[in-house]
Amino acid sequence: MLLRGLLSVLFAICGFTIAENTGNGTSQSVKDSPPLLLVSFDGFRADYLKQYSFPNLQKFFADGVLVDDVTNVFTTKTFPNHYSLATGLYAESHGILASHMYDPETKKEFSVANDTDPFWWNEATPIWLSVQNAGFKSAAAMWPGTDIKIQNQTATYFLKYNSHVNFEERLGNLTKWLTEDKSVRIAILYWEEPDRSGHMYGPENTTRMSKALKEVDDNIGLLMDQLNRTGLWDKINVIVTSDHGMVQCSDKKLIDLNTCLNSSVYTVVDLTPVAAIRPLNDYSSVYNKLRKCHPNMKAYLKAEMPERLHYKNNERIQPIILVADEGWTIVLDGKLPRLGDHGYDNSLASMHPFLAAHGPAFRKGYRQQSMNSVDLYPLMCKILGILEMPNNGTFNNVRCMLVNQTCTELAVVVGIVIGVLILLTTLTCLFRLMKVRDMSSSRPFARLELEEDDDDDPLLS
Image 1 (cartoon, rainbow, N blue to C red):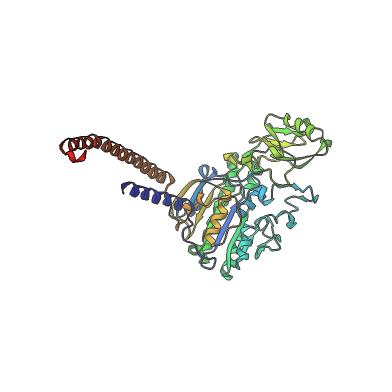
Image 2 (cartoon, rainbow, N blue to C red):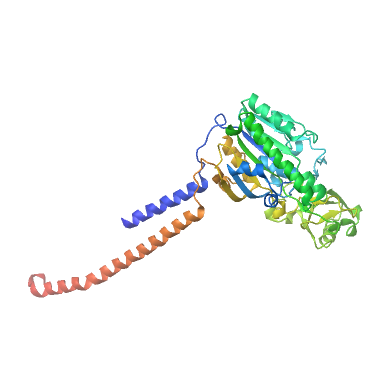
């Protein structure tokens, strides 16, 4: 009975542990869910939060959630990462691989200035389409892809990209759509700073970056004021995040491909800091020369890309990929194109953004050290009450942010399980030892009694 009882306790704890790691908590339909506003400040490096003052942002997450460090996807560029935030997929899975792409089958070319062909975007279903497919509406202010007919649909309401439209006007359109059309369940907003200033001046230019980041914080203050003014503040879930970080570059850290290889034998599809190379004929020769080109640049054949980068399983990935070390720039003309850049290995802290959240779905005053950017998608699906499309995210990594999720520290649960296992093992061993001793001690007396009976009672013979 004791053994059975202990096993029952152990199974109960294990079941609790599974519930803690895989349970979905209270779910709700899209109709019953508050709307969600997702805001991206391009190029907001995570450690800016430690280096600069953000009174409005701090006020925002003090009553909500802050994730200090978000590991984004490779390449750490704007378009791939914004599509990963919206789909929960690595770049190789959603197909938006870089700022410049070439498709070998169709011979099509993609660039930031030539991005409107649905062909490039149709490999994934972004969250605004999932909301629309559930019978509701979406609104977008210049988020990459929202004005493109992905799977034959744009966002319900959208603004075409125009860098001259200020933050206030973008936000004003979103709050107008949210208040006037109650069927809008998701709104997403993109803003260029501090990325623009980071490129122009470099993140180590504290004077310029201080000014740019103050404007970002002012815009967050404007966001909170606008939501209060329109009566949305307590009725909407808001997530503020970014796509990537930024690192300082220098004209003393240049990798000139023309010093390693004749330009007539290959085509550059994308240049820096991750260069996509398409050899014109002798692949082996081109690769071997690039492999030895510079100690601060790694050359990979497509099939040999590190698994952790999730950057090999797509036809649009070129045969040779060059990855510059942090702060180094790959060039063709010997000139430094910008003082700050991103796109590097996504394991680098300088490439990581942050995430903050506020609203009825989120815990108050909760802080989390890290998450993956692809985890945001299942989190948003849970908040909105819609079914997830296949994705690379893990809801368990972010579930503790939500107020309706039971959340016990895994270390505590594991400790309890191990403790019970030790206790169970000890008691089982003691039980078996006692049983063996009882059996061994009872046999001599039984034999003695039998022998005595034999002597005294002749009828037994």
